[in-house]
Length: 235
Ligand code: CA
Image 1 (cartoon, rainbow, N blue to C red):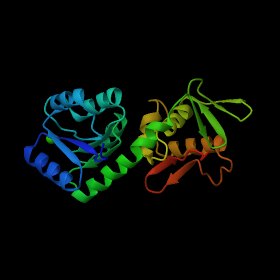
Image 2: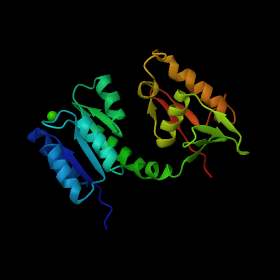
Image 3: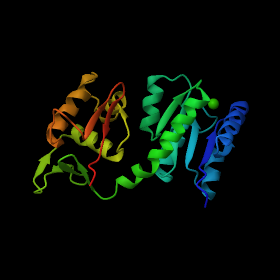
Image 4: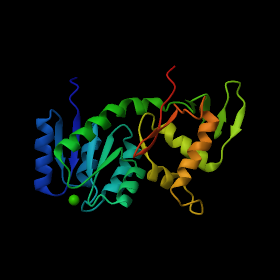
């Protein structure tokens, strides 16, 4: 087996599709262009690519629905969503439906290439991390089944629903910077605080629970201009 990565480009506009396929082929990827979701579903019955570049606006089944289906049925396949206007709503929904990243049109080919490489790099470790129901986080362990934090002595600390949801998202996405708006959107219940600082306040509370030194956090780190990233302990 060679380690050539296989990319499926799902794009209904033929000229764009051809350009993308030619560009990615020149970059050393095995690349296949597909016009719609029906073709994608057919191809995936036979073999799984490493990554799907998924246009949001497709005839028939749209990119959101296809991303969700990929996440549920082909969890190892990385997904980059290509959104039309680059609106915040599209971006949030794109990531929420299970895309690993998104890129707004129009984009520079080199920007796309950087995103693809970054997503492919983190695809394997991220999938390997979430095994079992207990995830070490800082000085504590998150018990996904019982929705509590555990000490080394097994002492439990209860979590609110939103705290647990937030830690679960981090646990499922180790070493991946997570956008603040998306974290807020994904963990807010409708009646909860809708302002932006809410996520920062929740992070501060959680750091007190899991960091060895909450003033100098090294488990849930701040990513300037983006949000936060969970860095698993290195044992
Ligand atoms: Ca389109």
